[in-house]
Length: 236
Image (cartoon, rainbow, N blue to C red; front, top):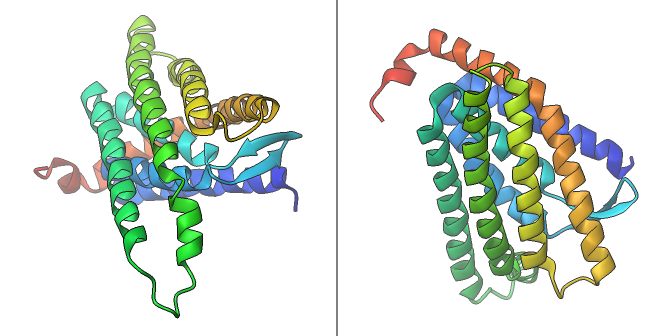
């Protein structure tokens, strides 16, 4: 199958698993989605592929799901909980980076077959993480601010508008900051531009496709709270 077909399959699977997690665990699932996606997408982004005729990196779908989760936190639970989710993702990525850098220092046994592969992936992670953390904090904090800005401007109407308007600008900030910190000097300039443009284009697609998922997610959260009120009211 083509990369484009796999991309749409990946998108459908990612959104389906996110909705399933929300149905099972409610608000808590949104924090788990943020933490899990920020770790996995920073591993996937190391792999370059050809997508829609351009050079692209993996990880854009799962990174887009972070915006889905923070927008749902903003919409249903408010700015404070959305920022809490942003900082949880920040900590998760720092935790993964520190622990994996320590893990690489252990001398492998003669029977080990994974050290070289782990070194290839996680040895490059510090630069990726520096780029990701910088882009993540700038874009996510802008996204939370912009989401509530548009919510106030529209009087709480037009969820689709604030979901997309906040994400489009945030994704542009993220793409420029991340690509140039992570890959400047690694790829030739023309490849770097391809990655930047494709990364932003793919993130825009994810944002457009996640709009109905935000509406569904809001309904699923309401259903979960009615079905399991004791979970949502329990002390944190």
